[in-house]
Image 1 (cartoon, helix red, strand yellow):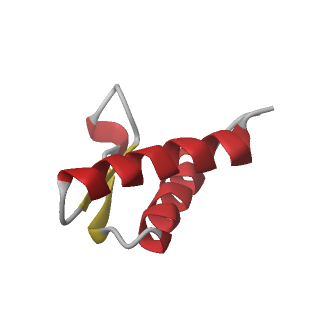
Image 2: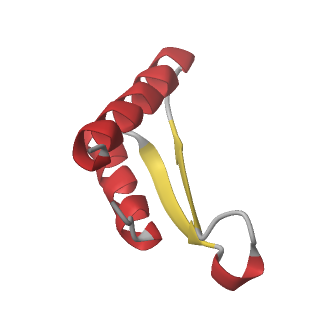
Length: 67
């Protein structure tokens, strides 16, 4: 499956929002960066919440985009 970077970044941001992440930002690095087009950043209230957010994003992306 060919993923559009912007679509994936928005999907991740929406997942983070659903899981109550704070200060969610999607940075468009586009032409300025050869490694990635988008960077998604958020904050959490604790280490435990940060791990839960990372796990949720990993699982949702896997469910939605893995063959």
